[in-house]
Image (cartoon, rainbow, N blue to C red; front, side, top):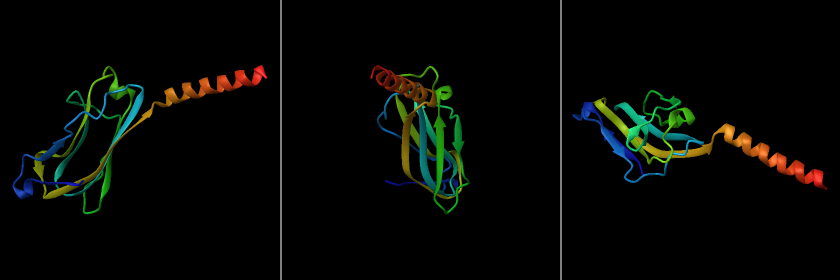
Length: 140
């Protein structure tokens, strides 16, 4: 589903934000989360936030293109630094354009939240797997 919001140019200075109705899961500090969406238009400021128990998290990196008539990807990455002390808190998303809204309209689509293990977690798992293989090979 796509979402369209009018900005201040259409008499809507309050912005147009939507929040996920239900939690999308809980914070796992051993994962890296990437939140992304496609957007186009001219309403500003663009908002794309991951919330833990209703509080916006600070991303460790982000991609914020200048909106235009061309669909562009916005993204936010949240790693262990962004998630410290939040293990088990509920995750939700807020997106759209905030206050004070300026410009005409913007469209938002293809919102995704991906979670992958931290690189250090993957490294430890790989070492464990290699140890098991080595032990099995030595026993033969």
